[in-house]
Length: 128
Image (cartoon, rainbow, N blue to C red):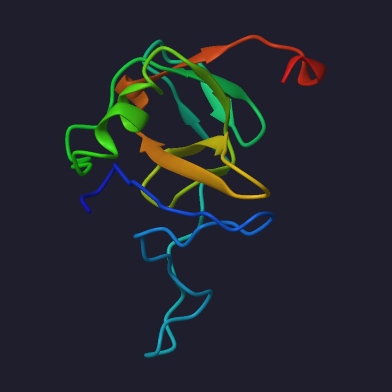
C-alpha cells in the first residue's frame, strides 16, 4: 500500500486484523531511534485531531486499491464518522469500520487518513 491508505482484512472476534503497514520499532537495527509518533495532526480545516477524537471521512485515500469485493465496504466509509484509533508516524489518522457477520465472526476495513481526507467532528465520548 501507499503512504496514506490502508485496507485491512480481519475475521476473528476480539482480534485486531493484520494491517499492511510497517511501523518502526523504538530503535532500528542500526541503533538509531525510530521516528517519534505524533500526538496530534490537523484535519482539512486546520483543527487538531488526536487519538480518541471523532472524524468524518471526506475522501477515500487515492492510494487505497481495494479488491472488487472490498470496494463497496471501503466506499461505505465515505461520509461516516469514526473514532481515531492511532496516528501513524506519517501523520495520518487511523480509523476502522467493523461489521458483524454470522456466529461470532466479524470483518473490518481500516483507513489511514491524511489531513485533506478527514474532518474533525465534535462528539461526546458516549455517543459512539
